[in-house]
Image (tube, rainbow, N blue to C red):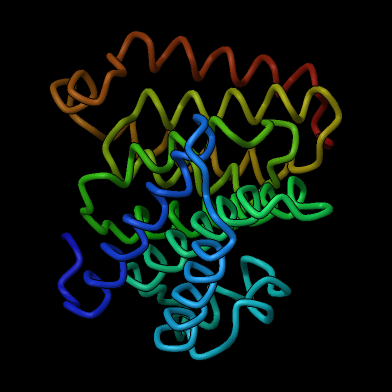
Length: 237
């Protein structure tokens, strides 16, 4: 369901306005130093109010650490994950707009965490209407080869939560391509793919069709996956 917390919703709207202004700078619009400072102060206040810490500390935390901050007992607060994702993505645009030394790498690190948190919000079935668009936008800015096994797994479960079965399967095969090219995560990929296909095979044909994966394609894909795993060897990467 969409965000219900009014304070979080208001903060997200503020971030959207700041993000739009920063994004315009990619297309030739100027961003003054005063605007950079103003946006920095706005972001710092939102970090303090909703995350309870500074942007600098958040920047040093891993995705898993951030998720622990946002949840408890294995539960992730989808609304706060969405807000923090928006914060990190805006922070990345601010880093690019400021153009400081090393800003490109810093911005990509922020976007990678923003993607992870947006995926977690979707896995928790937060029904924000722009969530899929935001995930696809972040995916397009991050090199496939830089994704961690945890990010790949989140992508699979995100698309499953959206009932976009073909997209979940695409994530499995894209992850497999990376594993075959030497990336880590073969064992995790096997486990995730078994769980995904076990779930899909229990769905009725109409629901599979609706999610873009007819049963005959599902059967063919699972056979291809098994064959490629066989080539990789029983131990896997």
